[in-house]
Picture 1: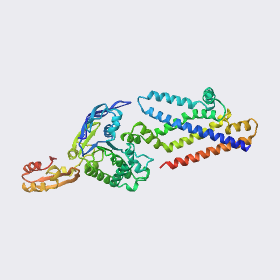
Picture 2 (picture 1 turned 60 degrees about the vertical axis):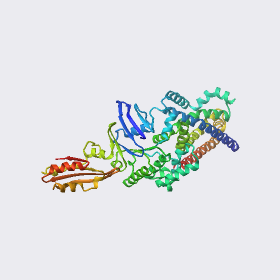
Picture 3 (picture 1 turned 45 degrees about the horizontal axis):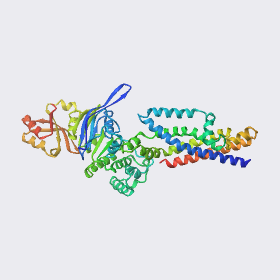
Picture 4 (picture 1 turned 180 degrees about the vertical axis):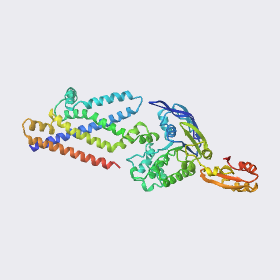
Length: 210
Length: 329
């Protein structure tokens, strides 16, 4: 049993970290896009569109999103079960979430810092890479922590529809076969992962805040 | 002339309709000069400052900077103009997660200047501003005065043609204010840095400004040398900074003639009054007097009561020898 839990834990971590990485990779640029569009008079309509899309994706419950994405997942990943298919679903769900979180952090940069950067003659690219990202770095670490902890729950949900990992283990052995000890162990590991993420993220963010 | 503003208009739209922020404002700044932009809160000072470094587009008017109209330029030209104008904001706006050194080096780094040259330029400025020992500190670890000096250093490092200071003394204690004003005057004298200072602090105007642009409700009410601005205040033509002097009723109810005399420049320290009084055998009673050191010379105000036979001749001669004379009664 423990070897199964161990294997499931690795699967969960694999899904978690890869989807978290991809969501950050695409989510933060989308957040930058949202931020820049919201501040530009010309791009107001583009912002409204992106904003709506982000809201729609964020309001669809994850389990429904997985179902809706089945044809897409099948096309892109070649399969709809297993960790890799789940990573696709998780990433799609997490990108808008990460984008919104990072947009909020960009909005929280004091307007004076934006003003003084502008008055130094920075271009848009420098503004993003030299000011917005560095000035929100501790907050973005916090955002990624929140994202990953959310993804822990999502991987468990994905487990219910064949993704593998601790969620599937808990459903298959615990729920369908009444092995409640397996459920308990799965939950303990999930809680431990969340705690570890929170602790590490908190420490990192604190270290970066001056 | 480094900067010349001509008929600048700016208005904002809000719920109650269009609000005029700047109304036909014109003034200029010469190279090597310090100009104060003064007025009460809401007079349009900060808006004017924001228009000068193109953070705020205007409705109409022109801003000539360094021989070029900078209103309505495209974005890349705007960026290159901004690099020639340093700004020290009221809230300093240092980058929170960069050290003092990194903050000061920042404007140079984004221009791709070599590390060696950056180091050289930063170090020469920090030693002048007394920040050498704080280079590896983060802004949150600095005092208000140090943060401000770091912000000034960050503006100076670009070798700008003009530095805009927004309310530089509003968050400083009196001693730090004194040091800041010394620094500004020093930089102006030694490096020939041109400043525009937005302020409502009379000390800043007295000690640093060559000329004053006085705004009231978005209109420029006065633009000229600092001492003339003080004459306006003394004559109650500018009341935003408190009325100069309320004479006591007992003084005003006396019998003798009262004169208000303003001195400016070299003659302030000469015994003009005594010489002329002796010539016409006039008795003088000084009721009030003060001398202030303006940047462009000493400025004195005096209220005297006179007694004697040749009062009219005395007044006439004195009027020619002082900056301004008025009979209070």
